[in-house]
Length: 398
Image 1 (cartoon, one colour):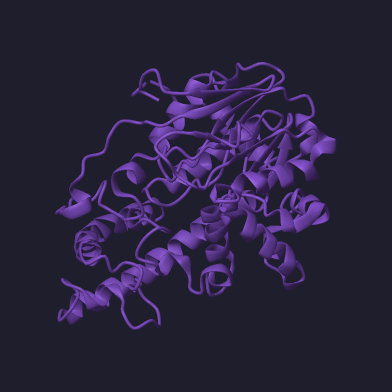
Image 2 (spheres, helix red, strand yellow):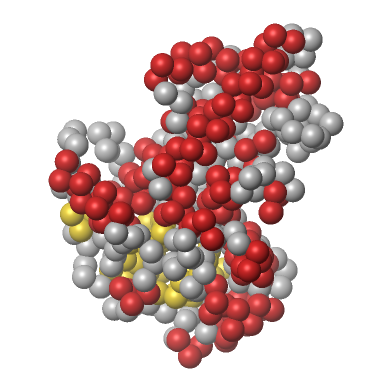
């Protein structure tokens, strides 16, 4: 079993304080090999399994054991759909701090929304029309709040959360999640559903506590400087002849705007990230972390157009996340790799819906499914060869 590494803790603290977490393309100029891990979606157990499987980092000694010309790449979406987003964020951040010339962590759309929710007065309204924390699915798992609630308050939270999950499962049973918010100004909220409906005291207490939990999460993200780290994530990276982007690149952006996106986060202070002067850049960032055009009917044509724009840099392959499947998929005669293979056990079992994981609560419908072991695939690219990597075994003590 791994023991705490106090030297590592202080090394990470000082490196992060000095700003060693920004993406610096010059660090990766000699990259010829990469191990690419898709969307982790708040599953810290499987995140560690895949890093172990990469054979690039010894998690016991926290040392780089991969080749000098190799890189470990994360495709973004570290949060949501599971209850361990904070743990995944801190784990991946620590890797980028410890190995700044070896580890690349991309920005995903859920990461961008988390940053906006924490830094904007009204949350991620800039992108979603409402604060993402107020949606009843696919943005913030309720148990994520347990990561930020003080120990003295956790018993009270665990008392309320079974009612929370009971209401959510009622909403899911009616396939009504797209219309129901947790709170806010819309006509339907979670408080309109049993057991909150007609129980004014429970409803009032839950609403008060939910606001408190959300405030604690925002404060925690800022105090741990995870917001600073998220703001420094790259959205477009060219590495060893491979274009990396979470969603995709509309060819209509053109080469100049693509180059602007390649430097979008690294030199910006988090408090300036959403400034009005960056509106066009923010719109472009949001588009590329959510774009799915490569998977459409004209997808391969768009892939070729983007590769043509970047031909002077020798780019011959595009790797994206964001669009999930049970496996990694190779498309367009191996010019496009879709790396999101549903690595999160919570997404594999429950999709976009939130089900109890740690909290003792009744389960029915979708939430009655059992979690499977870590599954999916990662991508290994070397000398132009693309190999899809599975997990040989699960190392429980990681």
